[in-house]
Image 1 (cartoon, rainbow, N blue to C red):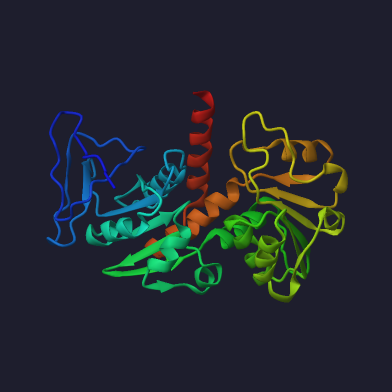
Image 2: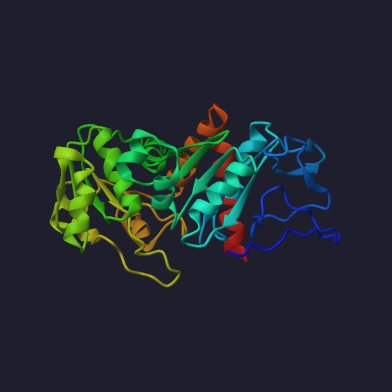
Length: 329
């Protein structure tokens, strides 16, 4: 894998650390006073000296593509709100190179990683330790780095439950849910709903085997279903990309199957309101986008890295500002 060399806007070329990996950071512009953090020879990290002095910790999101990620905006806002001299960068890592990226993070002393597609499974197989949830899902979206020891977590499902409480106040315990989709996000939601005490979790997917595998994550309350299950649900979740494109007017679930007593959540956060969400709201049905899940899974990662409660309000403000700026471009 070729990672292009960092260069200073003032034409001063930065020297690499002891490792030979070059870091490509598409969303982060290095200032003129980029320098190496003063640390042990085997634990040096890239640090930025601005008005506050050298940054003491570095974290990154790895994925491909990663240029669209909101994580740098969200996490840097969180670090600033918590008065931490930390920085968070986006790091493009091609499929198949997740292990090399973990080696880079370990050698250069990063405090942690966020992990997005297509690396969640590969990272789960490569870390030294897995949380119970990450082990069950066989997927990692957050890595805590403690010296040479890498601990993999999955905060997606917990982030969904937290976001649901934030947006609607709904407690899944004793509720009936439908999840449309069977990919990584759907699997995390199904598992989290089962853990939270939902009494029936129906999974709808075009591929029966994938639906069965996802439903199994909820244990005895999980089952494979068809669209008819929507009518009897308290909660309906879209975990597919249907409605994500700017010209995509398709809906994942027929609005005629739903009623005003239900809560709908679309995990898509860009646009903030998909055609499905907009249509349901017009019909008086409570419907929410996926931004809160994104923010709260990041909040859980923040807590894993810092041991502190996350400044959720600052994180949400940063995410909305970044989305608004992109929409204006």
